Length: 227
Length: 227
DNA sequence: AACCGCTTGTGAACGCAGGAACAAAGTCGC
DNA sequence: GCGACTTTGTTCCTGCGTTCACAAGCGGTT
Image (cartoon, rainbow over the protein chains, first blue to last red):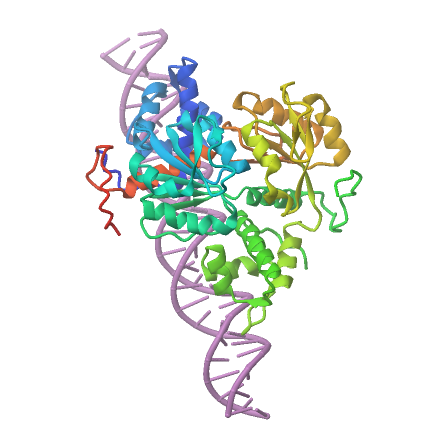
């Protein structure tokens, strides 16, 4: 039954989106929803949505649609959201503080069980409802809480050593916000999020479809004092 | 000559990574670099890197490699990084404050020229080196600074109206951190970044390759001789 | 009870991205 | 000046993701 040989990663990412939309629909009391409407809410193609859902086995009623709460529970089960995931966060700077205080994680089954920073100035500060701990306690907290996910929000220079310490402590998945490519041992999943890359792609796509005929790079008159 | 019909988006995203690595290499005084070494630093396949670079036309010397500074300038030109891009940021909560204070943008040619929030409590606060402005000034700032990129870090409920106001003011690209699918008029690029989706994909991949047969969530054998 | 419309689920084609192998070319050494 | 080595740029191929289009199934209606 649960032996789904593999679900494509792109599908998994979209399933997480469907799960969020469905949770909102449950709260608003919606009973059933069609693939077309759900696809519109998630911003995807209806056919693709049905194909994504087909990986979970049949979970809709033909002629009617999908039962919202049932579908949500099923996706949650497949994604492993039945139990909360314990995460540790290393690097409590600007971004780290925001991540620690961001409510969007806790609502979706992820809980930070430890915040760590190398700077003594940061250690002891309260961020959200946790205290920042020194790096020395990382290993103990990871093993003690069975945390499986590590989030790196440190400067780029120390991201690799932090990654090494996390994996050595037993963390199996790493979400890296530092702008460096991490190398981790086999069996450890690493996912890279580079915020400025997103901006650069955005800027390029705009430039690519931008005002045709404007080949001069000096186009954009710096009327504003943007320096 | 410069009429590159189209560069795949996946390539553009990697070009941004190469640009970052190359900038670091320039600072460290490196003169030339081979595709293999650069690929390792960027975390990609050497052949793929060469294919990416082939979209810019020949920019390497056979038998030697790529000249670091030349290649960096060329990628910067293609990505449109010659001139800084002015961005406005809406929603100065936890995440918004972190984005405003994040140095990784300014170093890469993106500058925030306006921070906006609907809450009077936030307006007037200083974040980074800018003051938070009320939403009423958004239109004037966007037109005055010729800002082309808008970043949304608001709660999900108001993200769509904020998107509408940004596009009405003339913003052509939007980076959305709110967990909702935005609909924008044609000609406006929207890019979605959902942090919890990243975590969910990570958790799923871990579960998928995790200890087989262990359906109990309490599994986690610490005798890590796995791979 | 049978028909009809609506929606899901699936099969097939298209396009794209990724990876490996090969040829061209330039440099270094003799 | 010539040969060999190194590295780029390109080409082919395999696999994946996405999209379109159709058959199957359920509910409501007459």
